[in-house]
Every structure is written in C-alpha cells, then in structure tokens.
Length: 379
Image (cartoon, rainbow, N blue to C red):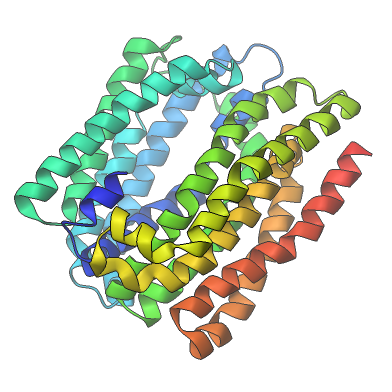
C-alpha cells in the first residue's frame, strides 16, 4: 500500500533509481547469507546456546555488506548509467549495517509458531517505516525518502528485538558454533543466490537496457501483480514451514498437508488472477494513477508468473522442511538459466512485455523439477 500512495508523488524514473539501490543491497545480503533463520526453525534440540555467536556473525556480516556497498557504489551507478542512484546506494549501505545488530532470537517467532506476536512486531515496524517515508516524500519529493524509512525501520527493529524478545544475546563468539551454523546454511546460500538472480535478473536487464523509467514501470507492475498473490503464499509459507518441519518424519501426514495447502492457495488466488487479467488498466488507475497506465500490458503477463510461483511455493516449503536445500538450489539454478536464455531474444522482440514472458517460461520450466523432488521425498 505504501508504494501505491507514493506512486502518485514520485515519478517512474525516481522509483527506478530507488530500485537500483535496493537491487545492490539485496544481492550482497544474499551472497553473505548465513542461513541462521532456517537453521533456527529446523532446530534439533536446544539452540539458545547459539544466540550469542549468531549475533556476532550477524554484526560482522552487516558491516561487510555495508563496506561492499560503499566500495561498489560508483561502479553500480556507472553500470546502470544512473548518476542519480549513487547517493541512494551510499545511503542504503547503513541499512544492512544496522540490521546486523538485530537480536537473532527473532527467528524463534517462526520456530515456536508465535504468529500473533510476530504480526504485531512486524506491524509496528512497518507502520513506523511507512510514516517516515510518506512524510519525507510529501516534503521533499525525493526517492531517498524510501531509504530514510528503511533506516528508521531498521533502528526500531533493533530496539524492539531486545525489548520484546528473549533470550538477549551477549558479545560472545565460539568458532565451532559459527562453523556449524554456516555449514548448515551453505545450501540455503546457494539457493538464495540463484533465487535472487531468478527474481531480480529481469530487473537488472530492464534497468541496464531500457533505463530507469522503464525499470520503475516494470517494478511497479511486478509489485502490483505479485503483492496480492505472493502475500497469500508467503503467509501460508510462514505458517506451514514450522508445521512441515514438525511432521517431516510422517510422510503420509506431510503429503496430505502439502495437498491441502496447495489447494487452499489455488482457491484463494484464482479470483485475484482473473480480476487482474480482466481489468489491469482500472486497477492501475485506482491504485497508482494515470501516469502508470503503460504498466498495464506487462501487469497482465507478470500476474501469471506470480500465480505459478505461488502454487509451487508449498512444495518448496516441504523440500526446505525436509532439509534438502540442495534440491532447492538445483531448482533455482534451472529457473535462472532458463531466464537468461530466454530474456534477451524476447526483450528484443517484444520489449518490456518480452521480459515478463521470460519470467513465465523460467518459472514454468522449474515445475517438473519441483514435482520430481517432492515425489522423491514423499514416496
């Protein structure tokens, strides 16, 4: 909802400039992922002893990302031929640094299935972030309003994670525990790298080839297409992941839960899919304003991609729950490879719509692999 409000204040080019900065930080966060969150949810026995070491690892990771962002900022700005993005990239380096201080016990919300407490925790942070962004955007009409909001939200999350969540970490580090966490997370890192490229490779190509304005239009169409669909899928994923972990030893029960979850996602999302396919111009007019109407054709394409992703998400959650991150890495690699094989010829033939078509092809190609690996695990 925040993006829809700001779309009436900022231009597509400004959204594209902000999008470049976000792409940089997201990439570096993926490459330095430790897998702590998944490790805590997949816990076997008491893991509270790992909190101190996980916190130190998180802080070091945040500092490393911030330094890499600062070093790479001029090169990224030049790559996208976007001098306007340089300041935003430098500014956004503060976000991962601050997030490094968040209490790692935050992951216990999910492992203990305390969704009510997590909802209010996230809602307060989001509301504060949104308040800062909206006020600054109205006053300055500048895209760095987004980043000041991210910084404010990150600071508040650090404070709340120590006030509301126990245990609280101390400055203590054990190499053996850090090695165990990172070793367990290595396949998660591999999966996340390919998943990042799969989900953001189209943005990188659009930003590089077509420029900031086209990137802003494409990203807004993507958000509009994927938000109602993936929000449902993500809620299912957060709720079912710890559940799937708890019943992973019982394949009959796990298979039944997977089927029920997939059917539930399908029933909830099909009406949304048809509405977006039928009246994309009206949705854009109401949500964003007429300056974004050129996003309507690509919105029709991207909503199909979003639907495919949502429907395979429960199966991916089962694979993760059964600790087969290597399967997820292979699936994501196949999707990424297909994306980059198809994206350039389709871009040259159909422009920005061709980029959207390439995401559908890439996601569809992964479906047989998801079915195969799920069948193998549940057989």
